[in-house]
Length: 216
Image 1 (tube, rainbow, N blue to C red):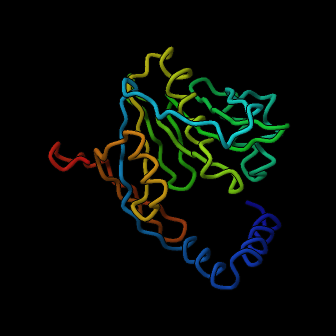
Image 2 (image 1 turned 90 degrees about the vertical axis):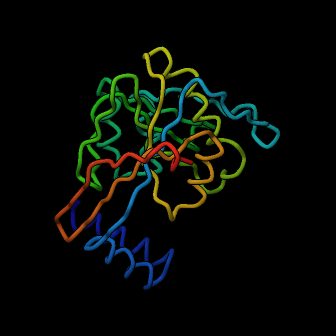
């Protein structure tokens, strides 16, 4: 990351969260310890039915291509190169929600090895498995069902033809809304993974499977 982009992000953080937000961000950059929950969902489970009463009919859910790169990067300019690389790499898939030329939500999946830039480790899906990551919805449209539509698209239309029978994702215990969303969707806890950041160093444990009686 360039100095200019780092300063721009710091200013945005200062405007949105104040000095304490900047301090938390700096601490996060130099030290972080978290125990992530590994969750799994079988594709055979029925998807969550979405009532579109609060959603305009003109919202479309499609599989992203390079033609959508500018629209996707409008929400996350700093990830433009990542998005381009993924969209050009076989094994990456992204369901996006479009409305009037704007991306309202996205859900990334991969069946190929994925390098996580935050943890700086490679996540390798097993045969028949897809890794689900970077689910996002613009704040103005949260709580209306768009995230469910995007996940449904991936689980029902994108992944089954690829021979995928289950998906996994990593969640932080403190992220209660995301935990609730995935639990409601049929994801169960199957393991734990520890990540530690010390300045430029990253340490990642292997996944420790949970015993069947401890899964929820």
